Image (tube, rainbow, N blue to C red; front, side):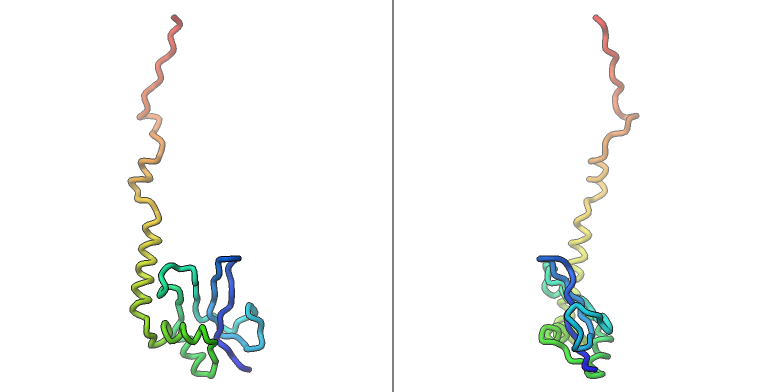
Length: 130
C-alpha cells in the first residue's frame, strides 16, 4: 500500500480548512485517513501560525516510506521536525493567542453596560390630581 501525506479539505465555501493526513494513495481527497498529523488553516492572519504539525508522527510516517505532496513537503520543511520556521511559528502562535484573548471586553466594560439595580434607582413620585 502506497501512503501519501496530503491535505484533506474541510470547512465551508470560501472558508477552507485542511487536515494534514497520512492516507492511502488510492483514496479520494476527502476520504478516510489512516492518521491525522496536523492542521493547515490558510485564513489565519499570521503566516507562520497557519500550520500545526505533530512532528513525532510526521517523522514516523516519513520513516516508513510515506511520500508527501508538494504543499505538504513545504509545510514539513518549515514546521516539521527540525523545521526552518519553528521559532517564527511559536511567536506567531503567541501573537494569535493574545489577539484572541483581547477580543473579549474587559470586565469594567461589562459592568458599565449592565442595567442599574432596582434598589439604586430613584422611586417614581406619585402623580398628583390637581
